[in-house]
Structure formats: structure tokens, C-alpha cells
Length: 205
Image (cartoon, rainbow, N blue to C red):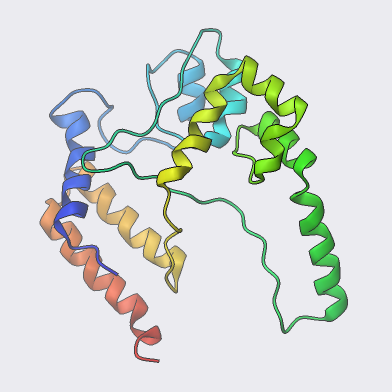
């Protein structure tokens, strides 16, 4: 996995520059969990956050607001994530059957629509978007369509072993750059070394 690359360095440097150079972001690390509340309270003018926060913002913001694609330098990019459903082939057949029934329930078009409306997350079924309740929701809140349309530019989630460890390494490098503790080259070089070490047991199998 490539971390010590020019595109990664540019991205990390840009994030640090938002505060130190451009003056459009608070200094230091921004608490992810409090960001929607800060926006709804009018403390900040613009945020980048999960589409799952749309429901909270819709119910708490006392002002008109809009949604937009993430900005692009070279091309649009969309980080996808969230909870996934898995069936393990080696598990007990009765448990697999029960799990499959649960997955079918949770991915039912009507339930997906209701979940999307209440939370703000994107309904994962195209058929959900054609239901009357979803059409009415989109009519009242066209902001909900932005995340769905942006999925045209989405790529697969980061597909590596030791995923959480790798994510933590990259996040720590980014934090060091944003806080000014390390230069971007040093941070990405060290992160690359740590990622290589974390993935070494899974290489050349």
C-alpha cells in the first residue's frame, strides 16, 4: 500500500494549510463527533462530514443550508464506509440462515428508505429511491440527493489486512502534519515504514 507518495503528501499539506495558510479552518485537530453540532449551532459556516449527519442537521439547524460534492483538484473522490454485512461459510448453517434473513430484512427497500430519511445515510437500494415516501422526502430535502449522486465517483473501501491498524497509522501521520509536529515528507515516510511492517505478515503468501 502506497502512503509515501506525492498525492498523499499534497493532500496532507493542503489540510494543514487550510488553517495555517488559508485561515479557513481552526488550528489543530478538529473533533469529528462535535462537528455537526457546531454547524447546527451556527458556530461554523461549512463542514465536511458523513452524510449520516444529515438527519441531525436537518432536525437541529434553524437556517437554510445546502450540500455539495467534495471539492476536486484532479478528479472527484468519495470515501465510502459504514457497516457491512458478512456471511461466513464455515459458520453454523442455522446461524447463516438466520443471518441471511436479517440481511434481507435490513436491505428491504422500504426499510432502507426509512433508514435513509431518518439518518441521512444513502439508501443502498435503487428501488428505495422510487418509493413514494422517498420521492416526497427528496422533494422536500433535495440536499439528500448529493451523496447519492456523488457515488458515481466512489471507489472500493481500503482493501487491506490489518485495516484498522493501517488507518490509525495514516491518521497519526496526518495529525502530526496538521499539528506541525512533523513535516509532510517525514510523516509519510514514517507512515509508509509502519504500514509496510503491519502488512509484512500477509505478503508473499
